[in-house]
Length: 295
Image (cartoon, rainbow, N blue to C red; front, side):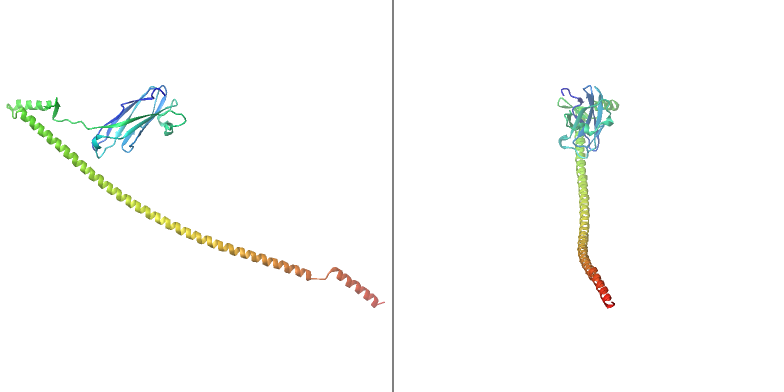
């Protein structure tokens, strides 16, 4: 696609960094197309920033903005350098799409779908200071408010308490003392923060060790339970196998006894009674003998 879908202003996220204070900045998005465009904001440090809203839909040639808030930090990054990045994804969506209709699947790459991605870096700025002296062409110049108060004091008292050079020197010394105090406070805060972080790390480590020990004990208990169940299952299987063998033997014994019983019944049937021919012969002989016996 030749023309960019979104124009982003500004091109980087600028935060005024102060310890234990949150900072916010706003980013504006402009839709350069004649179609509906959905966007989504991602960051490499989601636990450090809050984006509202992190998704949205821009109407054709429309504009919107979102706010990024950096949560309060306990330690300053080295040289005020921040390596965090933000990614803004955008894609064309059907007409009439609303913000609540935006899903992560809309920004999935594939099937020839065009997803525009733009990266924004994070820039940290020190908080603005208002020193008593401000540099002018390499020479320290007294703040006009202090000069006015000095003139007023001169008019009220009628005499000049201190020469200007002496006053400037005192102001310079006061500024140096103030800066030293600030540096000392920052160093002290950093040390206290480091001590607090170290204590938190130790506490977290102890909690992790306790949790790990508990998990190991639970696993051991579960393993013992499984071993007991396996032993019971082995005993049950062995018992069932023995009972099955016994049942098979009893079945074979019953078959043998049934076969013997059938043979005995067959023998008895053969031995009981006389054959029909034998009975007929006896009857004929009896008739003949009776006839001969009584002529």
